[in-house]
Structures are given as structure tokens and as C-alpha cells.
Length: 251
Ligand code: NAP
Image (cartoon, rainbow, N blue to C red; front, side, top):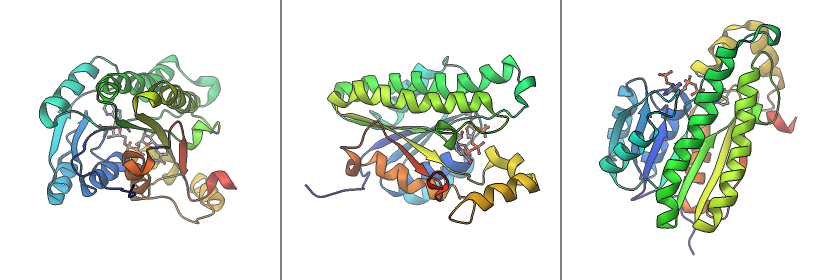
């Protein structure tokens, strides 16, 4: 069997793709041949234009993923617009920074709900069709905080650690049905999510000094791993969390 990274004829759904890592992944999936539905709360105007340039179809689905309320509608709109969804990328996520001793219940719930609860239930909704068809790929965006505790981000560390667990749990039950579930743990990537860290001179320098690659990551650095995990080249890979971190975890 020839190894193929092509996504020709596949249909993907990517959450939070108006900017940052989600945008880079959505465009890379289209460049690899997939039609792509984008689900999020902000208009993904730039992403739609970038996908149009690849000649693939793009579909915008407006959805606030801070609760599971829109989950069934998102799946229904994606499948009505593009056809059965073969690839789901759970990318949408938020972070709340505060000292541990002052951390609020609101900042706990908001991050767990968006980053973990919606990720699970959207995956469940997508997996039903994938299991029925006997094939599918789910790619969750985890974090270095799937492995580490971080500083001033306890709900984010809890949610992303949960993403690692749920990735393995889903992988185990879905493997016999031909569906692979993996995660990508991005290192420090220059996006809105890390704007506060980039702006803090001391933290930014400390982070940079610890990255063996000697630079912050770019959203495009994550795209290759996403295409691999969405393609048939990874058919025997499941339940993994792949760090794309310039060597951070190896140090
Ligand atoms: P970003 O630029 O802030 O992008 C986050 C995306 O999630 C945006 O599209 C955002 O939409 C969307 N989103 C957030 N809350 C949402 C909601 N309630 N409903 C719908 N969409 C929502 O940050 P990013 O770095 O690209 O983050 C993407 C993923 O990578 C996140 O899961 C993040 O935790 C993870 N990650 C990032 C890094 C990093 O260093 N940057 C490292 C590890 C993991 P809006 O634009 O409308 O807010």
C-alpha cells in the first residue's frame, strides 16, 4: 500500500479557524485536498479567502462553542454543506491567567467548558457517523500543559490534561471502528493565546531560552502534524499526543 498524505476527496471540520493555529490547520488541510467547514464565533473572512485560493470548498458555521448547545447543529450544517465529515480538528480554545490563590470559579468553568467539554461532545457527534462509515480522523489540539502544570493557568492545565485523557479514551473505543483519535501538543506558538506572554519581556525571554529550536513557533509549524494525523499515512497511529514544540519537552 502506497503511503499517502493526500486529503483529496475528504471533508474536514475545524473549530476556531478564523485565526492562529486553527487557521493554519484549516488552510493546510485544504492545500492537501480537503473541503473544510469552519466552526467558530468570529467571522473567518481571511481563512475563507485563503481556502478559496486552494480551489477547495469552504463553509462557515457560526457557533459559540463555550457550551455544547450548538454541537448537533454544527455537525448537521457541516454534513449538509459538504457531505459526511471524515476529519474533525478540535482547535477552539481559551486561556485564563490568574494567581492560583485568586483563581475564580468563572475562570475555571469557562476554560473547562470550551477546551474540554465541547471538544468531547463535538467529537462524540462526529464519531457517530465516522463509526458507521468505518473510517475517520479526530485531531485534538492539546498543549504542553497536557504534560506540565504551567504557571497561573490551573483551569487550562486541567482542561488540556483532560484532552490527553479523552484522546486516549476515544481512541480505545473507536479504533475497532476504523476511527483514529490523536492530539497535537503545540509548544509556544505566537498567536492571540500567548499575546500576554509575548508582551511580558521577562517571561518571553525565559521561555525562549528554554526552547532548543531557539525560536517561538509559528502556527504553520503545527500544520504538517495535522495533515499527517488527518491522512491515511497515520492509519495505525491512535491515542497519541504528538508534541510540536521545538524540543521543549525533550529538554
Ligand atoms: P487563538 O489565536 O486565541 O485562537 C483560538 C481560537 O479558538 C479562535 O479562533 C477563537 O475564536 C476560538 N474560540 C475561542 N473560544 C471560542 C468559543 N467560545 N466559540 C468558538 N470559538 C472559540 O489561539 P491559538 O494559539 O491559535 O489557539 C488554538 C488552540 O491551540 C487552542 O486550543 C489553544 O489552547 C491551543 N494551544 C495554543 C498554544 C500557543 O502557544 N499558542 C500552545 C498550546 C496549545 P475568537 O477569535 O472568536 O476568540
